[in-house]
Length: 300
Length: 196
Image (cartoon, rainbow over all chains, first blue to last red; front, side, top):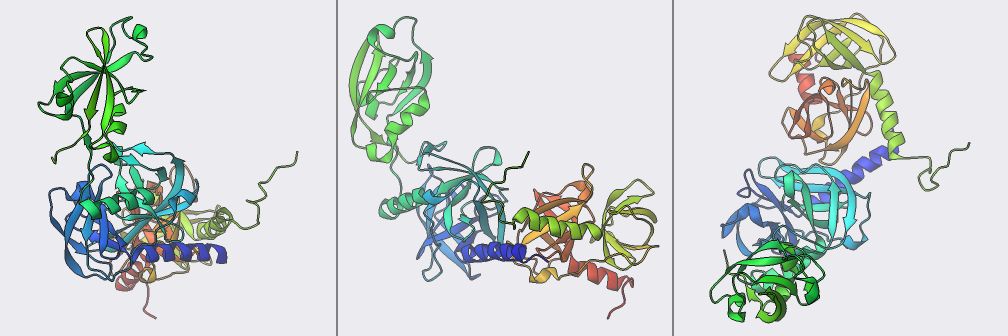
């Protein structure tokens, strides 16, 4: 009836098929199984939070073959886990996601053990700059999708109409679909393959946002009206070693004023571990400056 | 005043236009069903004089059918399979256009699908999506498509307008349809359709 629509339909099915050649099923993941993507030869990724606590998982390869895959790296910040899978299967074709445009058609592709390949489609509804995940990790680009996240899609690829991967699907707050862009996946996979984990910075303090005592901050040159009250200091932790005391109010880190507990996160990026940061503290009516060497967050 | 057109969007062919023409065709083979016991939904003219719908739509024996051009018909339930949620209704009108049927078994995940039905807020309403996963041997197919209760019994078609299933349910945000293959089997088994 309509040649154009038939071509369009075939293109979509081709994109699913092309992407599906590197989509795996991880039946133990989550409540009813999740998906994964063969990112490089012998290296697959899946959604980390769905396989927490497992050292190896069963994987159904695109060929239908079932194998046991070792979990060789995990990063809870970006929700990426790296699995060692047999080589020789097709690796995903990775798109340069910086070329993605709002309005572009995207497909979320997954695989389930029993039913095989599955897909939903939608659009890129907004593209934004870098953001931080709930766990504090830096994600290089915000890709908001207008797409129905189906059960078990986590860990599978989000692909463009050519079947090229623009990111890994994961779940955001309130059952929304979040996408970890391909550039971030590449960066994290590189680090995980090298070290098996992503170091996260650590101060060893508990903080709570508070308003400064009236009229106290301005005379000291502090612009904002809030700081972070230190309510816990870990003995021999990075902050404790630097002399941070219970009751201190943290005002700035590396010269940048804090707006809330989330402002600490930028100071805790992986590359900061082992390096000193200057911390301005409001203590007993005065501003005190300390140097804290950022530690590495211990394994949970 | 002249309407301004986006020059890039007015190339003469568009997804919207193409979906519209498939929908126009599907409306011709889709009827609105009102049962004498208050049920309501859609039905597909499967063969001349024969309408297929869901068992949960065709609750009673007698049904009023209405078509998009305003034509009306009386329908009588001739077969019902609650397990597969299918029902067949013979109507007292013949010569209407009937569906072109395609087997759902050959569909690929990602193929475009189009549904037409009669939700309460839009008669002959069209929605479009993709096939969620290949049907295999299952009697149902899932599609990533937005359906409403009035879609029940209406057609799910491919990009050519060939009917691949009868919409029957919404499951976790996915549209669920009984495959055309299951419909054919139902019609043959119940003796409504003679094997050719």
